[in-house]
Length: 264
Length: 209
Image 1 (cartoon, rainbow over the protein chains, first blue to last red):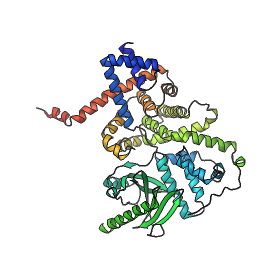
Image 2: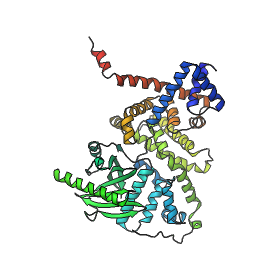
Image 3: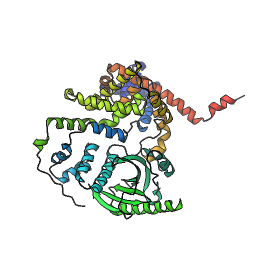
Image 4: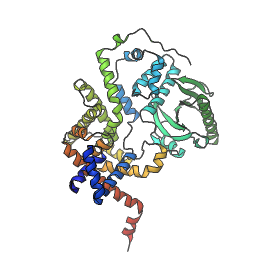
């Protein structure tokens, strides 16, 4: 093989498109010929840079919703989901645990079915569905930064509330970033934290929709939910974190929010 | 909270009408590729609003043709439809049927650059933000059909054969497009790195007596 042939084949090599025999020939050549060897090395470096650049974009949430809505099945579907998943409740949770390709839409309708009938629970169900979707769809963050002074202004003009963005990194809850989400048809600000490997989504909406300043606890589909109101805003914290730790998180958030409000 | 999971009395046989089953199969098969489709649309259209419309149209068209879908794989099939949808849009615009708000979209796209909010973890970001931003920009700046080839390969992870099917060109053309695309990327990347290493060097040259 000559260098001109190799020049084309090195691409096939790094793309894993060569059979063993040809791959061997290219490797032999690139070891012997320094020009082709360098070409291969620089291609690999470029390849590495491209793959770590994460070119893949997450579809925005409103597009996901739009597409899902256009592929909606007749209304009876939501009821019939039960029979699709009839066997046991356990097996349905198993689907989530396995991280199966269960679509975000299915997750959404399941939660809504599950919490159907109680408006307060239905909203909590939507919050949990949004939490699950954020983890499944590769759409956790719109703005990814651990700088609270970047996250806070990012929400300007996107939601009609100014959510408190509190950095609890020093206290073991890493600030990951922010996201815009929709709950009950309204845009809400979501601030994302992480504790070890657990993600906490903190939803902040205008209007004190929570009954009390004292956090209300729910467990929906194995996710812990805390709901409270403070400073005229409604808060939901959702995570698979243990209840005690989520309580700790909520306490730190409410304390810091109170400080922020009194300082301003 | 304790809510029992009522199974209901409806039976599988009653619900599973052919239409629902068809829709379920389509959703399960096609929705997981939303991010793939959106990314390709964004690189092809270079504009988020257009990309979203193209993806939506792609799903609707794919659903209409789902009955005739016999494989091979769902991903290249959807990407091929998306590509056709985008090309049809370009053709429509070339005929002068450009929508009035198109220019505004373009302006908006310039004001809010496409590549400034990468969806990666923060740790990764701190280390690679510089490189990532550069690479995204360089890929976005590639001329067609090289941009399409590199995105189908590096983002959508299609095989050469699949790329050939999606783009409707022979295998050899796929190989030469990828080789060209990478050669262009490599030289523009080298150029970008040189500028980054020597900030202000251009200004120095410009103001030298």
